[in-house]
Length: 112
Image 1 (cartoon, rainbow, N blue to C red):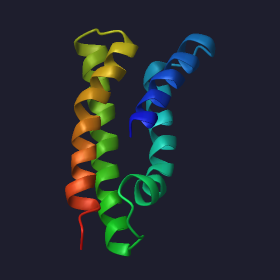
Image 2: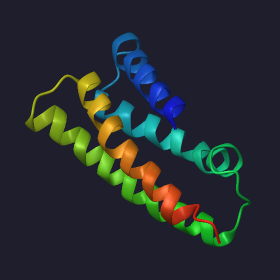
Image 3: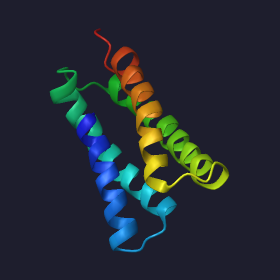
Image 4: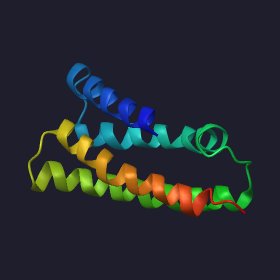
């Protein structure tokens, strides 16, 4: 979990500052790529459980909720609160990263 958050921050810096991409597009793209590998790493390494259709379905629910929440909060931080995109990324990481971890731990990967 922490590694994925660091990757998001680093790639935000690289895509916005070095490649000149829009911060909102960069954030949404990076978030989507990170989420793509999250289920496998959470299943195998973080929660050490087996794959099941029930877990995958629940993970997709949390993924959709997280994707919209993260992008919505990023928009609020950058457009309404006028925070720098790195501060917005860190704010999202602290608030929603923790919420997503807890939802994964107690809802998606609960012991059956």
